[in-house]
Length: 279
Ligand code: PAF
Image 1 (cartoon, protein in one colour):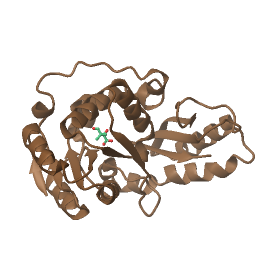
Image 2 (cartoon, helix red, strand yellow; image 1 turned 60 degrees about the horizontal axis):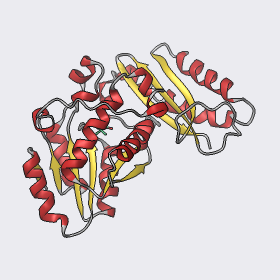
Image 3 (cartoon, helix red, strand yellow; image 1 turned 180 degrees about the vertical axis):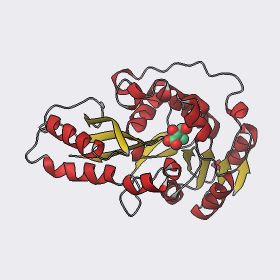
Image 4 (spheres, helix red, strand yellow; image 1 turned 60 degrees about the vertical axis):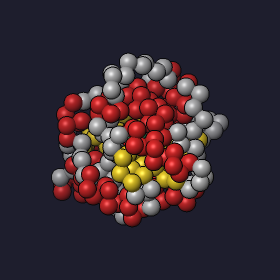
C-alpha cells in the first residue's frame, strides 16, 4: 500500500495504475472501523485500484469543538487499510487540500434545507467542497459511501450533477454493532453508560416499522421521539420520515417511492445519526 501525503504524489500513484483498470475511491475522515472496512472491501471487489483518503475536513464542521474532538487514529487506520486491500491511501494536510480557501457555495435546494442541512448550517457545503476536490485529485470511476449518512449521499449526487462529474456513486448498507448501534467513528467518544444506552436508537427505529400497520406517519414520528427522549441520557434533535430521493417529509404511508426515517440524537456531548427504511 502506498501512502501519499501530497496531491502530486497521489496523482502519480493513481496514474501509474490507471491503465490496469477501474479506479475505486473511498473518502473517509479516518478513525476507521468495520463499517469503513466493508466499503473498502466492496471497492476492492469491484475495481482494479483502490484509493482511500483519510482527511478530517475542517470546512464541513459547523462546530469547532466537534472538529477539535473528532477522533484521529492514523496508525490504526493505516493497519486497517492494509488488511482491507487498499492500494493507495491519501493522508493530506489541510493546506494540501485547500492551498487557498474554497469559497464555492453550492445550492442543493430543498434536499439540503432539511434535517442535517437545517441543523448543521454549512455542513453540506463543506462536504461538497471536499468531495469535489478529492474527486478532482483521484478522478475515480466509482466512489463508495455508507448509507448511515443517507442525506449526504443525495447531496453528493447533486454535487456531481452540478459539476458534471462522471463518478459513479455507490451506496453501501449501514454496518451495525452486534447490539444494533450503527457503526460510527463518533461511537468511540461515548462513555460506557451512554454507549450502553445508544442501541435504543436503532431498536426504536426498527420497532417503529411494524407500527406502520396501525399508526399514521405523524403518530409514528411522535412515538419514536417519545421513546428515545424517555431515556434521560438522550435528546432527539430531529426525526423525520421522508421520501428517499427528495428528502422531504411525507404525510401518508401511501406515498409513491421509497420512504426512510432519519434521526439525529444528542447522546451526552456526542451527536449520532441513523436511519431506517419503511418501504
Ligand atoms: O462521510 C464522511 O466521512 C465525510 O463526510 C466525507 C464524505 C469523507 C467527506 O469528508
